[in-house]
Image (tube, rainbow, N blue to C red; front, side, top):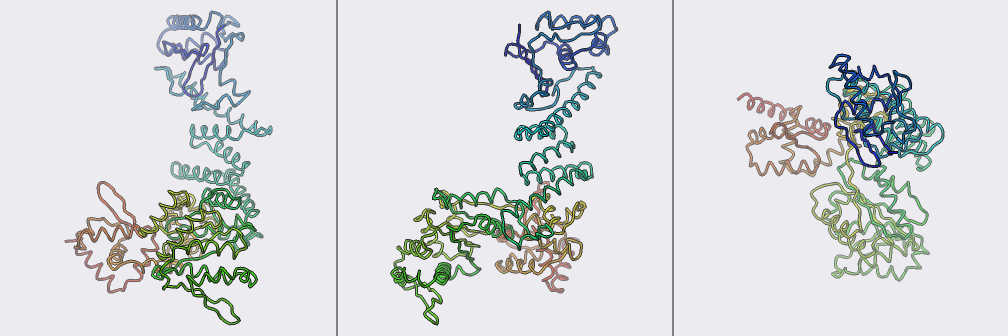
Length: 623
C-alpha cells in the first residue's frame, strides 16, 4: 500500500512514498483536495461544484467520472469508497496523513509550515463555488489553529516557541485579527517578555489607526494595562530605587523605559568582569539627550556587587584644554575616599605619586587635591602605576570607572585611558563610558582601535519609535490613547529623543499642548549653540523663519555665500543633531530635528532682526 502525505496549509503538496506528486489537471487536483478536506460528499454536488458552471449535467458527470478514474489510477482503485450510491469518501484503510486533520492532535505538525493559509496560491479558473469554499475554509482553519493553541495553553502544555511562531503566522494571515494579537501578547506575558508584548500592541495600534482609524478593543487594552503593571512590579524587584518609582501609586514617575538589549550587554560584561572571565569595557554613544548616562546608571544599579567598587566621573566642556584634568580628579577623589589606615599601608606607592603628581594637603594633613606635574617628561610608566595604585587603594577589589561625556576629555587623559585598558585588559579595572557623537576624530579613532582589539564594545543608542514615544509620554502623563494629532505633534517635537519626550510631556501637563520650552530645554539648547561658529548660527536663524522645511537651492541663492562654506555649515549642524536633510522629487530639503530648537533660536532673535530677515525673504520670493 502506498504511503501518502498531503499538506493543504500553505502551497499544497502531495507525497507518495516520499516522492512529490503533481496532478496534470487543476480541476482533478481541486476535487482531490476538496474530498480530503470534507471527508465525504455527494457525487452530484462534486460534479456540479467543479463542472456545473461550464457544462450541462451529462457532460459534468462524465468529467467527474474521468477525474475519479485518474485519481484511482494514481492512488489505488480502493482509494475511494461509496458509502451509499450517492456519497463518496476516502477509504479509512488508506495509509494517508493530512495536515489539516492531524494538527488537531498535535500542533507540532505545523512546525515547518511556511504559511498557514489553506491552499495558498491555488485556484481553479471559472469555479466561483470552489473559490468561496476556499475562503470559508481559510477562516475556519485559522480559528481551529487559534483554538488548539488556546486549549494547549489551558491544559498546561509548555510550547511557547511553537505558539509564538504560529500566532505570528496567523497575524500575517490577517493583520486585523485582534484575537491572534491578544493570544500572542498573552503568551509573551506568561514568559515575562514584556517589551515584546508592548511592541506587538503598538504594532496593532498603529495598524488599526492608519488603516481603519480605530483603536484596539477594550479587552486587549486592559490586558496591556495589566502587563505594564506586572512589568513595573517586576522591575521593582530588580531595582531598589525609590526615587524612580512611586510604590504607593505603582506609577512610573521618571522611570526607565525599554533598552533591554542594551542593559543586557552592560550586565553581561559586568558579570564576566566580576567572575574573572574575559570581558570588555563598554562605551555608550548617541545624540545628546538620548539617555546614555541614564542607561549606564541603570546598568550599574541593576548589577550592584559588594566585590566591585564603582567610581563615577564626568568630563565637562573646555576640559580638553587642560592636560590630565580627568586623572587629577580621579586620583583626588579616590585618595580622599579611602581611610588613613589604607593610605598608610600604601605609603610607598604614595611616594611614587610624587613622580607624576603634586599632592596638596589641607588642614590636619588631609589630602586636598592632586595636580599633574607638567615638568615630568617621562610618563611612560604612569599607566602601570595608576593601575597598581587604584587596585591597592581599593583593597584589591575590582573597580568600575564610569566616565560620562568622554567627548570632552583632554588628549593626555585619553592617552592614559587607552594605555590602562590595553595593559590591564579589563582584568582589574573596567570602564563604562558615554560619548556624544560628534566630529571628534581622536575619540572615534580610540573607539575603533579598542573595539578592534576586543577591549571595548560600543552600544549605539537610537531614538525611540513613534509608538514608544507615545507610550513614554502616556506613562509620564498618566494618560491613555492620545488622539492621532497629539501623537504626531509629540513625535514631531521630539523625534523620539527621551530628553525632549520628558520635557515636552511637562509642557503638555501644564498647558495640554506640545508647544513651549522648559528651562531644561533652554539650558541644553543654549549649551549646544555655544559650540557653533557664526556661520552655523546664521543658518539656523534663517531656517527658523520657515514653519516647514527649507529647500537647499533657496539657501544657496538667498545667502550668496561660497557653496563649500554653506555645505560645511550644514554638515556641522547635521553632525551636532540640529538639522536633518531629506530628498524629495530630486530636491534636497533641510529641517530642524527638534522643533523646540527652532522655537528657541527664533525667540532669541531681536524683533529688528526678525523683521529685516522676513522682509528680505519676502522680497526675494516675490522677485
